Amino acid sequence: MSLFEMLEPQDTFVSTGDIRQDMLNFVSALPQVEATITHHFTEGLYTRVMRAAEGTIIVGKRYRNKTLNILMQGEMSIYLDDDKKATIMKAPHIFESEAGVSKTIYAVTDIVMANVHVTNETDLDRLEDEFIIPEEVK
Image (cartoon, one colour):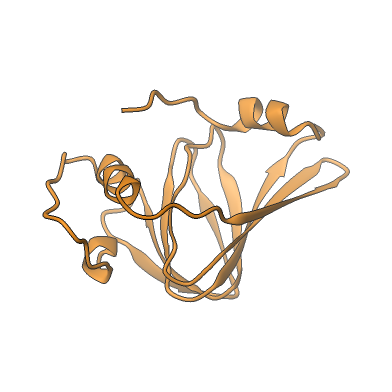
């Protein structure tokens, strides 16, 4: 089942042909919520932990490098731009996402997910510059 099939949009949805852009357009019309993010540092590693409530849709940023991802709690439907369909994942689940890939997630239940990065940097703004591919807003 696709992320779009799991949702019940209020309006008619017209695809641009780019699934990530479609999701950004789709979620921009929905009520916005902030996922809870915590940051953890240890020698040579940075871990970003996100907590999101059931029913939340997250369209992630594109990372410059491969990323280790750990679904620690819950169940989610995830679409990676390099895949052709969404996959259901249940915790505990560890997976790697390729460089340049954006993760689009639908939280089937409340979820807790971590991204692990190799770095000695601890400044959050510098981490954003180091790991995130800048994008123009459409």
